[in-house]
Image (cartoon, rainbow, N blue to C red; front, side):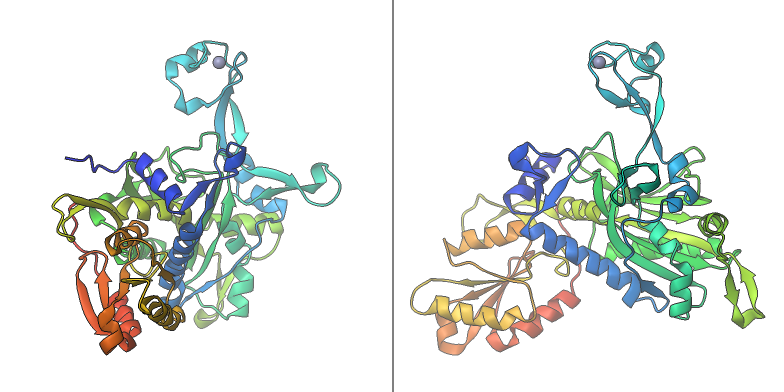
Length: 454
Ligand SMILES: [Zn+2]
């Protein structure tokens, strides 16, 4: 009996082997906390972002998008509280120079100021700001200090009035954004789970004060259902409410959606009621009026409350790899002990949608297959593979999660039909080549997560 339990090592290995994720600058020994997305990884990442974007903007009449700059005016981060509060408590070892988060070493070591690695003396605990600092312009002095944004949310808040007025938005409405953020994490671990450079998918929803808890509950439900739509095993998801000591300085009430990764339940997404904190602070720090004028209600003025849904894109990618992964015993080739590794991605996010495989290279089958691939290219991301036994080629597609394989055989030459193989059921159907596109599109639309023996 093989050990089919999911481990992070298996995911890391598959991710590298099949072109999802590589270590950054690997030939130089790698850079801690940074990862590169390969051919399959970038397709998957782009598709997750598009899936989220469609869910949040296209399917909601009152949400629009923006793409704000990574560099912002330094005052933004004073207003947001990041300069003051966005810190980790750190201690250094005077002897071996190791650096630790004070809250992550044994309390007895902290009390005795004794390094857990070498027994050397530890420094006092000090606050370490997680924002990356750089300078703007040619002079490297204090006046030029800017930060790489540690979250995308502030780019939305400072554009609240621009978006509201240019698009004549009426409260309640939301602004969505997908983009990079940077945090100088001291402890980066668990592959791409916690990294210094990452991508967020955030939506900030502006509501009238007093209606905030109602909208908060609405967004909790919306965000929970999103994962169901994405085909995630809902048994691996749970809510975690922030207790008083976990609550961020801006939050009134906060819940996280957690996913059961191989290393345990970890945060995927936050749904937070941020009250009027953000816009009040920006009004105070910028001196600009951030109030909304409700023209439908006698020009009533107020600072909107904000419900935030903040998800990690790269974290969702890791979730999908973990959730989709299965080592499965199959006997589709007649061998009783055949195994396959398969990624059961939702076809909407799978890196390759259709693989076209000629049964043989010879007798004009390869040319015919290329011809069919050319037709499908306009509609789908396709792959073409003619090398090796057909069973091996199916396995290769299973391993990157390709939901559909089209096989061209001798019958195709005779009557123009192909076989279409479904990744999850491994069942094959024959259909005319002219119907492939329509058929695949319908299958994607009707996709439901199959019961799996994970
Ligand atoms: Zn030490």
